Length: 162
Image 1 (cartoon, rainbow, N blue to C red):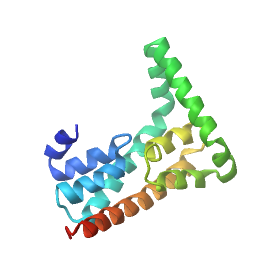
Image 2: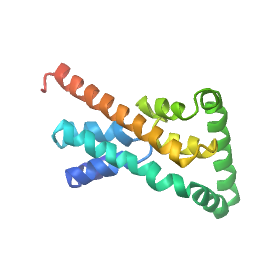
Image 3: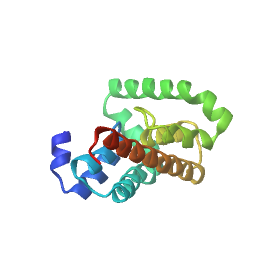
Image 4: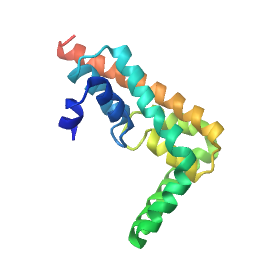
């Protein structure tokens, strides 16, 4: 899959990769800077825009999407419910304590399973209104994009590639 993403037009490659769950900015920024050798500022902007599409497009329709997934097959619905229940338990203390700020923090930490997809699901599960969830998720995405860009540039500098 990464070979395919690397073979796309560099701009499209960064945008698409930043939209993919688990990859998001953690993969799209190194891909753009290291593989495609694009400007770090351009890559940061593209990755932020690509990852920002997730809550903008998915959050308003997540309820319908989840109901559709559950309707496809009983087992699929059961697995989805187990996943959502686990996410709810995992993040309930933070969301109850911090509200929308928990979404900022969750997205800003660029680790696996902490990103715009997870925050979008958390916002849905906890009923955080779109008008509150969207700015929080976008703020976290911007912080994560900056952190991953700095880490990528720092890694290149340590490797003597810059």
